[in-house]
Length: 492
Image (cartoon, rainbow, N blue to C red; front, side):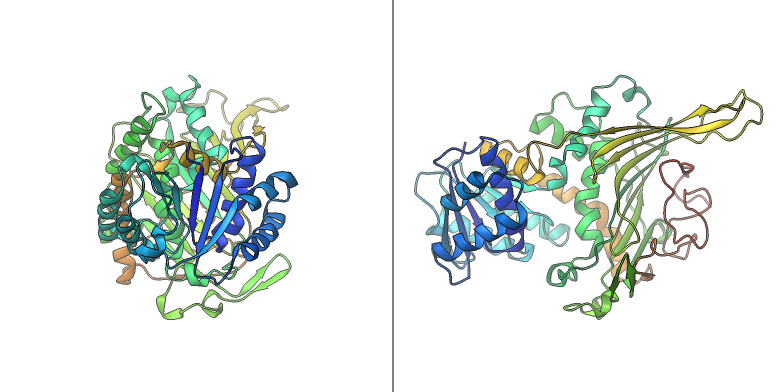
């Protein structure tokens, strides 16, 4: 296990909100020993005392449920070094010769090539590891170039392209539910499943993140990485083991099977929009274009939705719908698997039996199975909901990721070819959007999202697609709503 973690960008938001609390959780759970060292590097003109004061404040704010002694242990283990992390000589000063370390790039992705080059020139000791946050490049060409730089620096199994969604308990439970339950795996295919919705809708607006978000947008921020990773876990073939090679091979198979989108497909099967001024709960939210730090001419989307289909034996005919939006009326963060209706009901006209659905709640974590039963009146159908809530995880998602990094287990990180395939999936969408093929819609903050009704609207919603109908804002029905009818690509 590596005992030295260097965080480049150690005074930033990622370090404050996630990495420091994760380290405190690891210490509280007994995963870090007394020899653990944390080095934070940044351009800030601070010394050790100033950084430790800052770290104490952040841990008190973001890790207040961790024992005080665990928080203090991380503060005591921390050292600060002012550095230009793109300068090989400054980077070399962070390294102890012959002692491997893990280097976490808690930095804007645009800096990754320069920082990796600096690390390569500085010379990392054998056994060291590099950790990168998404997005991995800004497009496919960037991802390919970055992978070449990383390959020149360290072996692939020492490169951790992390996505904290993969460490969430419920996300991992998707695999557990599929692979450890005989009742599910035989029906986990297009014969029985009409559509899978992977949704991350949130009431949060920009919240002061214009510096990052306005140059990225909803599709790159969520769909191209987090939600696509969830699709891989839902759709992958059962791996031989959950080791890094078997698990990641099967995820790459899924990405390679995604049907490429033409411009016509992008028009029919994607939507993009940004929010206008509105009210969410008891707060007024300005229009995205009026938020501080936003350049309206960039036309950055805050809502993105894409339908994908997989050209594979298991999934031909099933629609995978990925959706995310900011400043919406309600939080909805889940993977909803909608099964097809039964082929025949022998009950006469006693009502309508809604198709079953299985929903994996991401926040809050949980599992819900919706089925149909018979009510007290003869031959009358009633919905039944079976719900399971998960015990709180021992470690937060970032805690699990950091533990894997320190232990050298890359199973839950993204392999280089996987990162490139993920860009291949979405490059046609990004290209078409940049050329205005799909118009940028609008929706009021606090609404259910943009209204889209069929071809020409830039949206996939159409009759039978699971929406509530015109005027609803195009919001999908709940898990008890009618499951969408999958259609072949190009069908009217």
